[in-house]
Image (tube, rainbow, N blue to C red; front, side, top):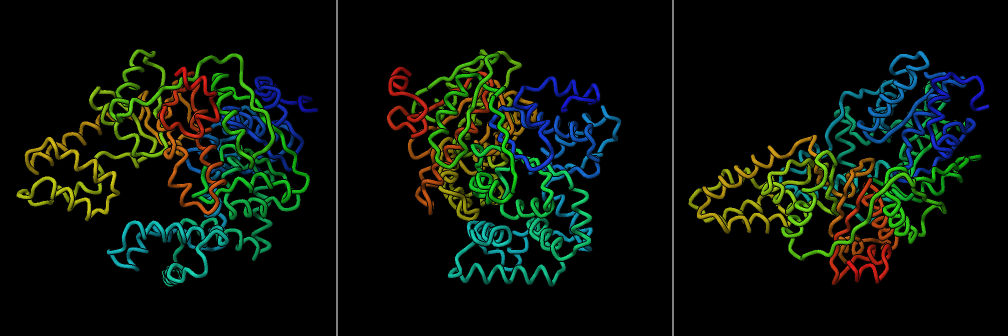
Amino acid sequence: MEGAGLPGLVEARLSRLAPDQRAAATAAPGPVLCVAPAGSGKTTTVVARLAWRVATGADPASICALTFNRAAAQELQERADAALAELGHECGAVRVRTFHALGREILADAGVDVTRIVERTAVLTRLAGSNLPPVQLRHLDDAFTRLKLDPERGPAPTDTNTHAAFAAYQQWLVQHDSIDLDDLVALAGPRLQADAALLARWRARTAVLFVDEAQDLDKTQLDLALLLTGERRDLFAVGDDDQTIYAWRLADVRRVLGLAARVPGLRRIDLETNHRCAPEVVRRAARLVEHNEERFDKRILSSPRNSGTVRLLPDPGDEVARARLLLTRWAGEPPDERHAILARTNRELVPFAAVALELGLPYRVEDDGLRWPDERALAALEAADLHLPPLVAVQRAAFGARLPPEATADLLAWTAGCRDLAELRASIRDRTKAQQRLRQDHANLTLATAHGTKGLEWEHVACIGHDEGAFPSGRALREADDPQRVLEEERRLAYVAWTRARKTLTIVYDPGAPSTFVLEAFDTAELAGS
């Protein structure tokens, strides 16, 4: 029945899908979890299902698709509009929203003034005074998010200072008739539950609910989605347990693994083929993530039409030498092909920005956290007494800006070639301007952390820093309440990074102390031959 009586353009769209994609796109209405590994074409499948549901009788005004950020929402809205235009519908016929945007609309419908949204850290600074250390500010911000969105993962009751600060913050919001960003989602569910007419109205508007990146749902987002679907459960959730990498944003792989327990009649449909990566990349990435215990039992296949390779590259030991080796190696690649250097942290990318400047290579960044030098110290250096020795000026600026030790070390190293503070400041200004000119949104070279790459792809990818204690993060494991769960998330993070590569994947590692992940994905003989 899936193809009977369908408009020709919809049938044509379905005919272009792989068999597993088509099975998901045309699954009978009801609760469906589509498990979509990296490169399996989940967005293509979602758009095809949207078109199929409308073509088979669903009212577009009753369809809502939820995503996690505005960029993803915009892309899906544009693709959905194009697909439904083939059926004669206007742009926006299907509602595509982020969770925050949907929460805002629900609260506005409930009579809440959603124009008074405050920036939390600004309020905390105002309440605590300007002397609140940045580390403490980040701690409170994170703790408050947990208390609003997942109280069970919030600070312990014995942490009376944090709870008192939270109470004071909440009181300030009430007194100023304001809400913060987390409230857009946290308050939406309770408002719906307290107002039957409001709930009925929004259930009608979300009668057919799509949820993208289901593995990243926090508790409040999942609760809201299930509240909206009600008992009818016309839900199409798409995600990948192997790409759950945002525990710090309250994602928990157990949430998607246990979804069937919360949604009676949930059908699981797997997209099995990675259409993006070369078979060897798929094989190594799958071999790595198979070491995780908390995951679905599934197959991850590759397309025989793709070609490429995986390279092991021993680290030369010097950060700048490593950066120069990789970037000059790529100089001979086709100029229209895109490259990416992926790292566990922004700190590891700094030498690549320096070498890119040396070589005059334009590059783009996916994370504003990549800064050289640390911009928090620049203002202090600009205002410093010119009579101060450069070393003293940098130390004072770093202390005032509360820079981490590695950033301070980088700035101190910069002083070596400068005779006085004036020359240092001029050098920083000149280099900063030169790097700003090289940062181009459409550059073929990208510098990014692994966390910032989900949904992206490049022809050639180099993943650096696969060393013991670095990736997986030794610090994250040491500080973890459950090291095994953190190790599995770090492994998923590596899987995400590796599967960004369409053609070649280069894994850079220390042969004297290779990462656990290198040892899991490669045999001893392969390492010896690298």
